[in-house]
Amino acid sequence: MVRNRRSEGSDSSAARKPEGSDSSAARQPEGSGVRGTYAVGDERRLCILDAAVEHFAQRGFHASSLARIAADVGITQGGLLHHFPSKEDLLVQVLQRMDASDRERFFSREFESAAQMFTALVRLAEYNSARLGRTRMFNVLAAEAGDPGHPAHAYFVERYADVVGTLSGVLRRGVDSGELRADTDVVAVAQELAAVMDGLQIQWVLDPKGFDMAGRFRAYVERVRREIGAEGS
Picture 1 (cartoon, one colour):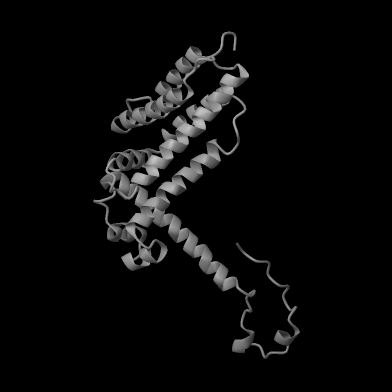
Picture 2 (tube, one colour):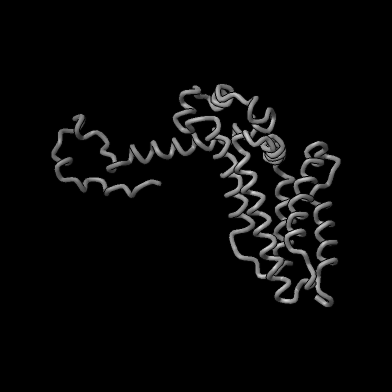
């Protein structure tokens, strides 16, 4: 984000200015002020997104207030709206940021096998078990989004279609390669994987200290692998 600074004294015209003159005061690289503004703006946006996660997790979308989110960040509601034009836009940005982060961390490369995909899903469950606020927010918003009029309804419909499509595609390649049984219903298994992961998240959020979400999901995945694995695979 920071541009290279020019060597001190490289501007000969500046060297001829009298010391202390306004025109000679600490010349900055061209555009450095703008770049600094961008950096501050990016940091402010991230702070708003983080605060929004907590509010959406605690209150859901409809009961969350832009004014309270802004106050938590230390800015006015008008300042928040400078970065996010509406509460609906803020919600979508929160969800998209969450998905982008998870994709980069766990699904950035094409899986070479179904076993590799199963391992990544378990790692995701383990990662989520350290993110109570984010997981609570997901549960609350997913439940609210069952209403077709909810601003996140289309997002969740597309998300589940994408998740099932991605997982079933990997499972289909596993069938074709002989890794998985030929009679495997890849779409059904993909839907069940998504449903079990999200269902276990609900139970964990209700009892984060007493419920081993990652352990339960790991055990479930192992059962699925044994059931659909080709003999000797």
